Length: 261
Image (cartoon, rainbow, N blue to C red):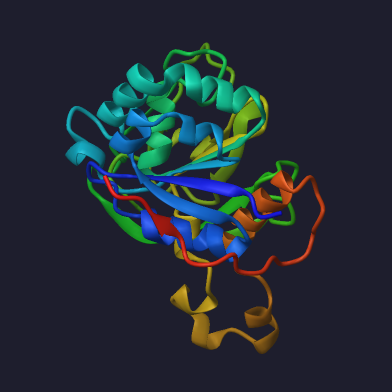
């Protein structure tokens, strides 16, 4: 079984092709869909098992990153998104997608329905574009078999701010090993209470081939034969949808389909 993955595009989102490619390499059947088309035909979300909100600069990051996209999703698809999550289908929000999930109130607790934390300007007050080392929680379905690895980041508003009265420990899925941007407890990614929604600032879709790593030429042949960490995250998602039918690397499911607006 190849799970159906829906990848949202439009309004400044610009990582949809890479995200769809990563999910396709992991074994999913992918459809890239403009947000306006999903709003016009919301039943398409019900047919999917995976929803991806890719990185980019939705609505030019006006007001704050992900805010307008979150409002649009909340007003037009809020109840449908909550149903999607309650059915234990998978959601991944990467960078701008993470920002939207936070502002939607889906992370850290998807049952809260109001914004609990925020992602704001980096401590450095500038855009950061570099590779970082992260530490994953391997007990989550997204990071099964992963511990410490590298991923690229490219964001200007990735610093997580958590109010003192907001419990966060149980929702930490990914942390930076260094203080990259001033994020609370060096958090790089959050997971909801059901374990089926992941938001992260690093870009796993940008590390699905070893040749994407800046130091790939110095890697050993053994390292290059293993699965790149970014790809493994997407493989873990596909395996979870398949109810654990396969713990081995999954084959390509084909070229992503792109729907017209």
